[in-house]
Amino acid sequence: MGAEPRRWLPLPRSLLGRMLLLTLLAILAAQTLSSVIWLSQLRATQLEGLVTTARSLGHSMSASVRYFRSLPVAYRPLVLDQLRSMGGTRFVVSLNDRPLQMKLLPNTPRTQAVTEAVTAVLHKSLGSSADISVTFVSPEDLRIFNGGLKLDELPRSWAHYALTLEPVNPPVLVTQIQLAPGEWLYIASLLPEPYTSLEEPILPAQQLWFILLTSVFLLLFIGLLVHLQSRPLKRLARTARHMSLGAEVEPVAEGGGREVVEVARAFNAMRERISRYLTERSQLFSAISHDLRTPITRLRLRVELLDDEGLQTKFGRDLDDLELLVKGALQCVKDTDIHENIEPVDLNHLLHCLVEPYLAPAGNGSVTLDGQASSAYPGKPLALRRCIGNLIDNARKYGSNAHLHIEDDGVAFVLHVDDEGPGVPEQRLEQVFEPHFRLAGQQQGYGLGLGIARNIAHSHGGEVSLRNLREGGLRVTLRLPRTPD
Image (tube, rainbow, N blue to C red; front, top):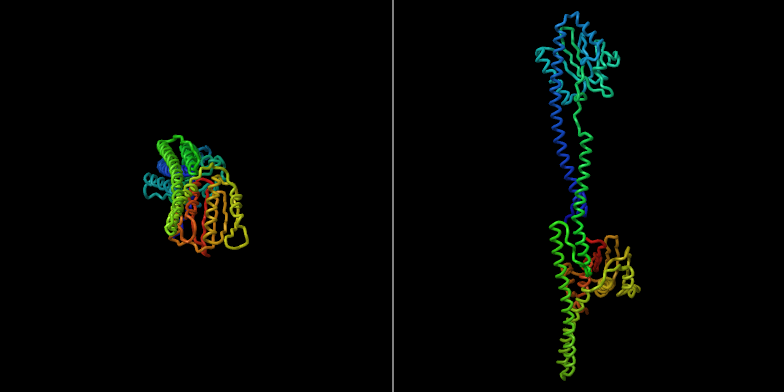
């Protein structure tokens, strides 16, 4: 048989836990998808606005270029000095005898979109043959004038007002256009808000808080709803467990959703039918016990009056078989339909009382006990005593000696009863639980011990199972859950 597939994400066992996990996964998937769509649309919108802004900036630059071209060459330095003296201008403009070389910023989709838009506008306005360079430079690598001065080396009124936004240092758009051989117009500027930094937008903190608060409120609402709807199911499970132990239980209160109400109604109807059936069965077997004992006794007396000893022996043997069948049927009912109240059972004391008579030196019929129960078990004392007693007697009868091993982890009480017998054929492991079935026909008994033990275990929500040991012998395992499965 193949191994059971490993679960990377163990599912909670409760309905509430599974619903909350499913809701959380649905929220995360929905919010992630909506956030991705919203963010992609926002970036597309901002990129479109950025390109529009870049084109407007390109038109302003082309107007400045045409203005400087219209000035006499001798007046151009004077105009630049006046602009620097005035301060507060949008552009930092200078005339250089060559294009300045600077360390450029890495190319990104946004920087490329801006440079292409500005270049296209300038070429359209100034002519496609114009020598134009449009690049982005960080403020630390920016160079101005022929001497390659840094921004911090200039008077504050010359360029700082146009090219700095403290405490942020956004990238600077540098455009260099050749007006004539040996004369280059240098224009440095910042992009206007909100495109100053050229960074692609991410989910803002406000959006993240909205997702978090929405998820928390939705999980609280779903948790409260599932808790209210699962309370009737918990009551139903508790009542069903008490009913399986034979206790008198009240009808389950009908509440919750329509489906839960239907389940409660069906359970109440089943409870009434089972209760009526158990009562009728008890009365039936009581009547059988009463009615059959008298004619059997009367027949025995008449058999003793027969003169033919051979015929007397045959009739006696038939009456013994009939009485054996009646006693077996009555014992089956008596052992599996015990009307006891549920109470804490000291399993350690119970086992000690059962094995004490057999705690003799090793030999045929001896019993050993290993381990102990961690706490008392809520069940029927006499029924559990009969269940475990049947298992021990069965091991001693068919396997010479019995070895008991206890495993109790707080979730379930497990008792292993090992014997030293020949075991049971694999195809008969379930058949031995059937009434009156015995592998060893010469052995005395009714063939009811294992079946009665399993029925008592079932009434406590447990199980009795068989397994042949590799080293020989049979292992009978009694498992009694301490919590409802």
